[in-house]
Length: 296
Image (cartoon, rainbow, N blue to C red):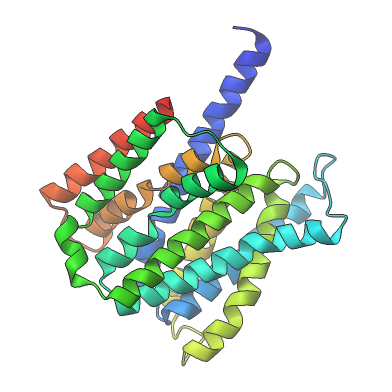
């Protein structure tokens, strides 16, 4: 193996590790949301607003970088803002769906984002999709269906709420694709600051209209919001954004199907929610699907 090939392999391994860690970090977000003392929209707002603290602090500590290109044209600024707009709509739609349909339906349908990433990548950018990858994608999605209670669980939902959950998946797919395009031009930190700030700006008016209270009542409530912002967003989304510079967007989004698996495990450990045989099998199938897609 040449030195260049070894360097690429090592870089891809680091990116894969970052992607998996990002999926695990975001997988913990339902726990923070469940324990939050404010409503779903307010929780989503604080998720992105508080995440700006470590992102900006890290930027100041780095004090700029020769490889960190600055935006120069209006189109550059627009592209840096766009992922945050997609993310804000995704969060608002998912949280709204949670109040209108079953939790199983909202989570399952919102996790169809990899399907939309694959379809949009092929339709808009002519990204090739192999049969092996499609097989892995189908296997992983089937695993999520089993994890969430099987096809019968879908009968417990509301049609409008289910549709809003699908909208959430579509906008999260747009977020992943936009981030993937930006990573070839801007640094992880710059993309995260701009997208996170624009998401917070978009979420604030929605929160003020939809929620009776913006602030939690106790230190515990603030701790949950800071955990969601620092661990799931500043930690998880930064890791995913870094990985998207080196890994295809379709595969990266597929790996994020680890989120419901992680959420189920954390709910079992922290909230004493039981994990049955079907959930264990579903989680294993998700992992098998990801491994199959990796080979494609």
